[in-house]
Length: 501
Image (cartoon, rainbow, N blue to C red; front, side, top):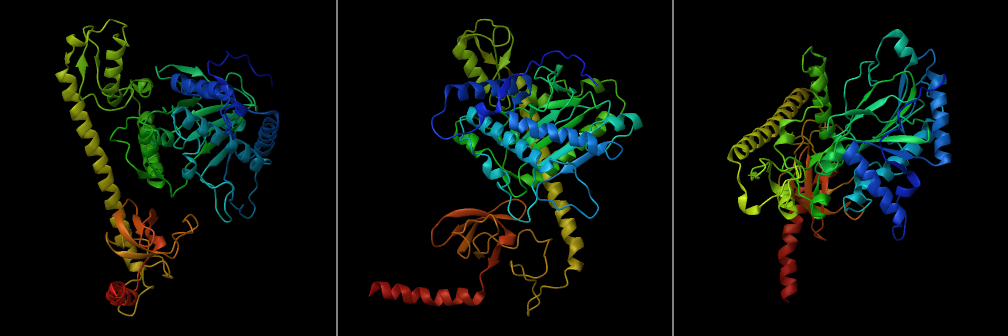
């Protein structure tokens, strides 16, 4: 079947080899490619990566195998590296090679985005899976292989695949790469206009989209891509680069680079962030499925928060000022307008002496900010209440792992999992670092003291011998035995007297 003619894509086309990280000084072509990629993501919500011939051949093989595999069978298959196939389970061919090629391209794009934000290119690597994966570990990133020809004939929709009348959607990970044999994805630009993003489709062209996790760790500097599928009669490979579950998503690198950060971007465990994003997406999809006259403008219309926020720093306009032309600005954008002496909306001249406060806009921004903070606190309280309920239900099941005095053992050597207890230690308590696969060797077996309590059973501990701090979960810690503490307490006065002699 011949592909129908499509209008050329307005997106920047960047060669993967031009943005791939490399040793040595940056070449002029690298800087131009990174700038073009970032400008396309900011102005159009997407970009196109051109693969080398070898990687394009791998994806072409994967797309052909998807068509052959799904003909008369299922319409989608989710592949994760490291997952063992169950008995009788079949997988399309070339999935491991395609996963490896797409993962390399996604990491290269993430490095280019970090470079554009004046960060180290490897700043986000600690949030991703190890490469290669350790033994017996399944990747957090995923590859969705779909062929929807028979889905259109039957009229049914599979979970994880867009429907024929596709609703706007966003991804929860860092970046998403889409390879397909026919065009069929529209992207919404920052102005709310939809356009065909993969007009020139093929295995050597990857559509690059950004997700919620990347927007969070960049404090909103990297916008979230909104897209929808308009043509389902095609084979496609959708790779999602997702943070690993134990990662902590925070904006400290962005703050260190001199960018402004809104209060809403607080550190949060990746697992909790993904769960919250899934719940929000479910609520949005439920709202869109309800019949409503304004249903078509649900995503394209600007939100109240975006109207009341500074487009550069993201801060609420609590310091809004009105210009002579009637437009209002605040925060970093106000400083830029004053420096340029021109309004960025109507291009009118600006006299700094004629500015006066917009009291109404300031009041509305303050109220919306308070409501936003109250909603975040309410969501945190609901999560805590849900955990308490789960812990209460799990108490009757915990019949093992008890000490002689009847207390439940909470250390890492306990044979029975104590899943309900999230905070078995208190600040100031001395613990022994047992560690896990990701714990640096220099901390394992060391005594430490709890200095701070974080979310989801995580603690910030400080090693007693070196004074270095690290963040660990309660499963990686064990209480120091009382006998050992008493022995150390008796030895401290002897050491003090020996030092005086």
